[in-house]
Length: 299
Image 1: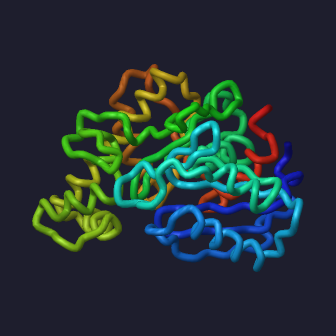
Image 2 (image 1 turned 180 degrees about the vertical axis):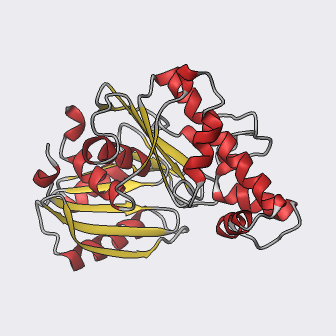
């Protein structure tokens, strides 16, 4: 499927915001963004989706793809992975509820959707084995092998931030100790700043302070870059990744990919997978959710 053949509606439910879009010819013709209610259960989430879609002109029979943060099992059940995010979502039947309410609808993980979109329409074009890595509040990802998005029955495939890192010691939102997310995610960076005596400094402030040359902030950012570089080398070993696209607010922070690349250069040549910036930004999960619903992963 070419991008211009992609038309319908898409929703992306993240931990902090929910976006909905009407997509025409592969272009987001209209988009709405509202805060996500982290305490809302399935029915309230569906009501929010319906409100947004009504405003966008969704009608009976229109194709709808929905991307969500967390795990989506192969039978369409939705699980929040990070503790404290979407606290009322624990195995709810999202797929069945979407079909009952909207008709031609399907759902998938948001990073997996972004990976599919980048592979087909963005930074992953031309790479049969491609990994999308998002570094933001948490660390997530999606995997495309032999031109197909990798999915698993339990929906855990692609949650790359939950792999362990030599840099990690703390427990991340998944409950695992010493993960990449526990070092490089936004929550972890803010926690590291507090431990260094700078309470209230979020990831953005840490990066800005590091750019100004403050040693404490530089150490935190460098540690995050090492963790991401190690993860990139691991994906080369496990998956034969030909290219990795990095996105997310931290992943695309000025200079961060260059830091990761510099750390990756210290690895043996076999593990130095090329790194690129993700090109689709916040449009990726929306385009990917619709593409997934439209059967693009059958390529």
